Image (cartoon, rainbow, N blue to C red; front, side, top):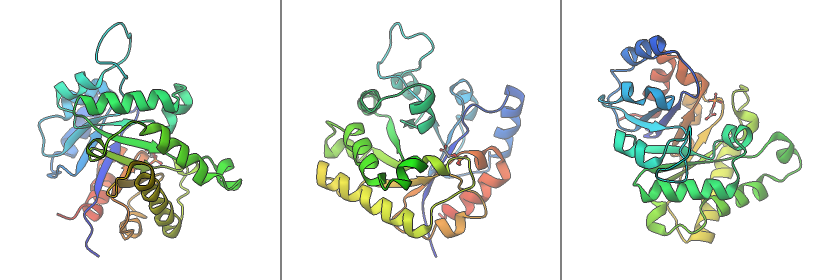
Length: 243
Ligand code: PGA
């Protein structure tokens, strides 16, 4: 089946400088803007200038100022990044990001014309307690609070069940489809926006990409671990992004 998804490679906090240089050599033949590499912010300049897009994994909620160690969406945009991942579960967990802070980051990115990938997802415990819908509803409602329909044209929601990230466990296609439809319904109900793009993330790899790509409701994939291997991410792109 013909599919034309987007693929976001979240390289997380990986690779030394010499490894990055080798990696960039190996992905230079990717000629589509529908693929976005998000390396450590330090390495963004080395990914620029090719035919794929480049994004940032994390931004602050202010443009500039006394925020030691942080990077703003204004800075990322001025360098050439096209999007920022916001609210990744690893940032919610390790950096104590709250929904309010995440909302501030979303608004700041949009103000600076950086597209947004808002990550949402439930833990296994929440899933077992049948709380997935409630958790997602809150993350959507708070994360997107105050956004207009024209803002929402620049927002993608990445549905990333926390129990699927880096574990090799993936929900069934049926479950992913159902959850994406739920997310779309919520955004439509609360924000009167019908066309929100929803991606899936969590243990996407070269073996399951063919099957995952058949989910029509899914606009693309956020790929972590599998994106560290240039051959594997190239295979994933080949299947998911047919241009
Ligand atoms: P994974 O990570 O592909 O390694 O599961 C996905 C993510 O954290 O975005």
